Length: 390
Image (cartoon, rainbow, N blue to C red):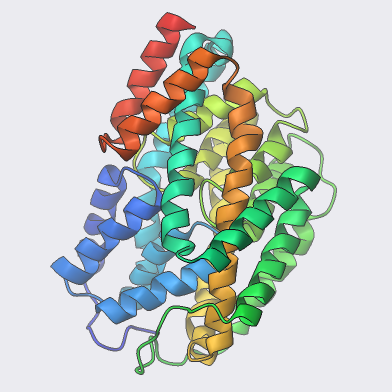
């Protein structure tokens, strides 16, 4: 399967472009999509604006890390499965290596997880997630109906809790989107990809592995680690920030690792380039060393990869249906509500304990939202200030 309007590029060029993006793409999923648009639409012309918008719309519809899925799809449209592998490796490996090294550093210095600099990183996480809620709310909830839906989802999740309720809430949001006829993403008349044989095989593998991930595995084993990460990658909508409660439930609530170390790793993930899902390398390395880092990294990205391979050809069956696009708009509004609930619990409750903490969060948010300071600069600064003050 290949993109219909451009010839394939060389494997070497594809690798170099995505490796450079993996080394320089700071700022999280929303920023990554902007980098991809500049690189592959404006600069290189590998995709038209319409094709790129369609790839983004498809990846938003699927669970998993949306920006990584967009990059993987672009690689796939250029050089098939080889291109997908090169795109994923180039974009993912730099931050995955940094996150694994951070985990080994915390293991060598056990008391670091409770020190002041970790508290500074936790406060940065509050500001980063608050900014994500703000940006996603503006983009995905432009009218009162979708704003109301997002707030309703947040209220239900905060009042009731429970990870499985998140899936129910997003399903209901999709139905509300169809019922209210929310406007969706438009599509080009020309197909995104040529027809591919047996796309359902990827969906079968996805569902089979999901069933296996629900079995009771021995906590701390590689099989348990793979199951936890695969399940998180398979069931979360909205990308890196929204996966936080799933992983918190699996690793902190189950006592597999302390909450301070967990949030310290998540804070560090904000400061490195590349996808936020490489936080999985930190979790895997913390629980099971190098093998754990590799298993966790593959497991969390695998479901989204399988769904991209299944979804690209199947998308042609849904792309012109207004109901499908309205359902996607409803899911997007539900994701904003989900992220709003996450902002309070566990992010806010684990970090903001005093008026001084709240003041620090406000200043960090001001730096992000108004002064436009990059996260990679604020992360070491907040850690240093935390070490001095707390």
